[in-house]
Amino acid sequence: MSTTWGTASSSGSRFVSYAATVLDVLGRHPDRPVVITPDGVHVSAAELRETTVRLARSLAARGIGPGTTVALLTGNSVEALVARHAAALAGARLVYLYDVLPPESLAHIVHHVEPSLLLVDSGRFGDMERLLPLVPAPAVATLGPGPRGGDLTDIIAEGAPQAPEPLHVRVAPDDDWCIRHTSGTTGVPKAIQVTHGQYRSCLENLRVHAGDPPRFLACTPLSHVAGLCADLTLLQGGSVVLQHAFEPGAVLTAIERERITHTWLLPPLLNQLLDHPSLPTTDVSHIERITYGGSPAAPARLRRAEEVFGPVLHSWYGQSETLGLTEVGPEEHTVVGRHGQITVGRPMAGVEITIRDERGEPAAAGTQGEIVARSPGMMSGYWKQPELTAEVMRDGWVRTGDVGYLDENGYLFLVDRCNDMIKVRGGGIYPSEVEAVLLTHPGVAQCAVFSVSDQDATEHVHAAVVPGRDHDISQDEIHAFVTARKGDRYAPAAVHLLAELPHTPVGKPDRRKLRALLS
Image 1 (cartoon, rainbow, N blue to C red):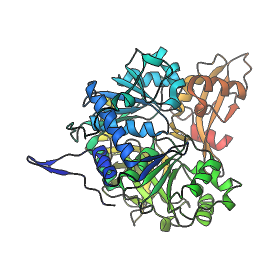
Image 2: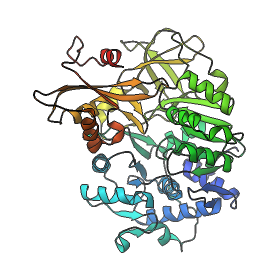
Image 3: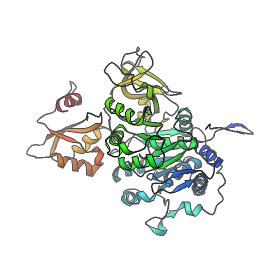
């Protein structure tokens, strides 16, 4: 389905946000089911459109608009989709409070972005109760009846008597659409600003063909890539099938029952589908596309996925700072580099990529260096962090911190990461985040955190620890200690107790040597 992004006015061309275009598409076939909830409820295009407009008008009536911030404490629910689009219609910037983060990290984000309103759906009421004592009392509203009775406002119900005419809020392309946080750090996290114009351009330039109309299964958080895929699906006149979380058996059941044509998965999740005993008896014939990315994928596993699902695999490479940069289609999974790794693809539409050497000069084809890019969806900067913005963004290009090379045909290959980010389920984490927690343990004298990949190319957090004198510590103790303070995904999968750490010539812990010695 083609999508028109602009509309004419007496003063010429007028910018139209992606959310306004979603409403336009929903209005074309009002009776068509466009969202299937985790409980199997079918929501029509008319219902989704009308509820979104009502919430947007209620937000605007409360002063929520351009320059204000709405924080979402939501899961994979129809209310979350409504809130996502309604905030954009009202012109407010959107901030997700990720469900993988502990309350302390969520509190850091709230302090940092100072939202005018916190919207909570029924799946996150427990997180709300744990968060609110840690932050200045924000205005709070529930998307549905809340646990605090009259103390909280059910905005959607309150807006129900209003006529669902479109909300006429002028949104400019340079207005903030979203602030995405890379991780929940102890301190000020990296907060990525993306404008309405940048996100709209990203959606325009992505070409995702997955059925006519597509049926997308959102089994990973809408706050991440699944949200982008859901937006693309609605813009193409398709349907979004929601699941609260990834569970391989439930995913396979939904693929068959709902005749799913497209889903987004991290490679470890794809591996779980391949290993599930129900796979051989599941009808996966409607799948036209499985998009994967976010962490390395083992070539043997990808070959197995092709045997099961057919030639439907597409890989995306990108960052939160740039969104999508490159794509590998089904026919390109045989393109390998000099060390046998599969390419991460060639640039998507509107994307430019170059490799820079240590002096910042363009490198010759085949020469590795830092990957530098500019894309339609690249950030405008880091929220309230101008120094970091100036360091990462130079002359309109984003320094990705990743090391790679381009071959003579323009295919990009990843070699390593400058910043040693570890990509685990739920997003990327930095070794320094875990090290900072470990060093608060009374029994830890020194530590270094690094990643180890298993046979499926899934990364796991490992920690090398030098115990303090007269201290006896165990892996279980360290795992529980980190989990309590940062969350389970930060906890080391393995703890190596050492008498001393190897160091680089400049005195830093040598993570590469640790990985070679201990993996």
